[in-house]
Image (cartoon, rainbow, N blue to C red; front, side):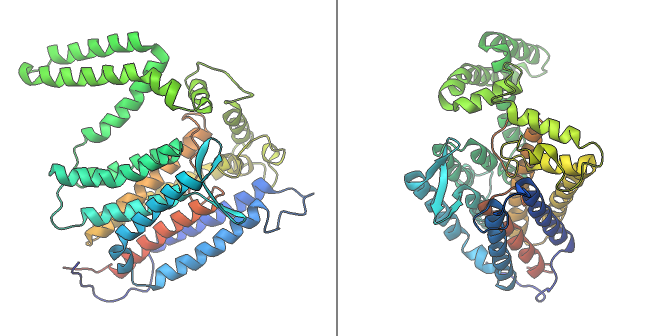
Length: 421
């Protein structure tokens, strides 16, 4: 890769760096609060959940510092190697991993556990950017599109084999990178339409959904101007929709795990289980609602302190913030993530180095889907699928992965801020 630049830049982008630091500090404070028990002597122990997260944070600080001082071209040149290493970790996890909450997605190393799927997001973002940055790659070429899609599908497939559907879903977000590079918009529309059709079929049933699709297709054909072209388009869309509809029951009953089936049933109102699958969301809404506008104050959340909310320091960390800091605290988190995503988008769009744009779109896609789904499931508007809130939820591998994502992006933006060909 030929590249010239006008000199080493010392300062990171202040906005991204400041929001990153703010979210990490909020995360540590929230984990401490969620785990806080005044009668416990183990809170500050390295064996406690907070103590382990603190050690992960220390490691992340060291790694961030190393990334910030080395030549970022190392990551560009080793993109495929890093990607291959994360794939190898996924394969090792399939063979030797431990099953937690129904997913064989964890490696236990000493007293620490790690989730390679989190690192695979970083590796995939790098590899996809490197491939698309190649001078002769064009997504209009079916061969190039195939290989770009394959980079996404390999880790996605390995993670599906681990039955970690939440992490696998995150990789779908990389479609946004392909869309930015010229992939037609209907490619993004299709998975969204399939998801909506899946839910509608569960609610209305196969027969009524198929009838509805047929009526819609008929109206589309009758009111189209080019009947010849519309006929084939309508038939393909109708047959695809009906095929998805008839596969819903099989996927729901034979692919999804029982707790995942129950969570979806609770979400669409087919099942009311406030003591089972609906318990987490019910208690989360109580915690957030009880926080009011300003919250109950730090360390004063009753739902949190009395352990009403399972996974309150991981997947449901947002309800801890909502209870203790109220609507104001929740909006602050939303604004911080929105600001971070928009700033990464702005830098990516305006940066002259194509790799930076591609990589930036990769990490903002991952951040966007994590943020949207985590907040959505905490508020009960999306099914609970076990996706952490970046930088805030407890989880060392997640913190490490997102730290590396941001560190490499900041280094790319800084070192090639005035890049030119």
